[in-house]
Length: 126
Image (cartoon, rainbow, N blue to C red; front, side, top):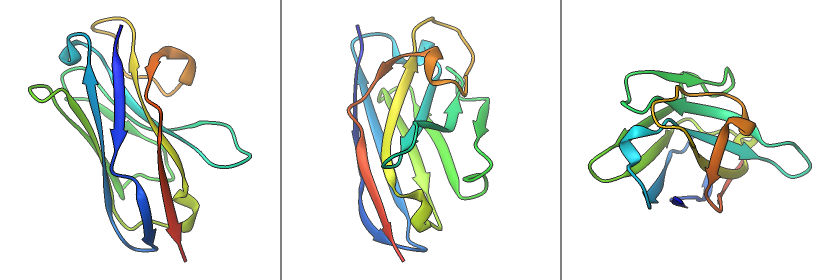
């Protein structure tokens, strides 16, 4: 079993930055691909970004590319999401997720992730 706990959300103005963190425990964090997803009110959960188990490979949704950066610290067992130039449309609950099979690559599909955090709210005012 693995536990994921997000932190760092909050209320900011358009153009501001935030850094989300996701602390992992319960298994060897460094062996599993991780991702960030978000869900706005009334919408389905959507892919934001993902990173390979070693950190060498990443992928971003078109809507955040160039503004968001995913990274991981496999010593601290922590996943990060640096969000710059935030827009009101970035408002959502942000979730981190972990794949269940060691060595698997990143995925953009929610169904490929076996473990999820409880989410952290990000609100961007205009």
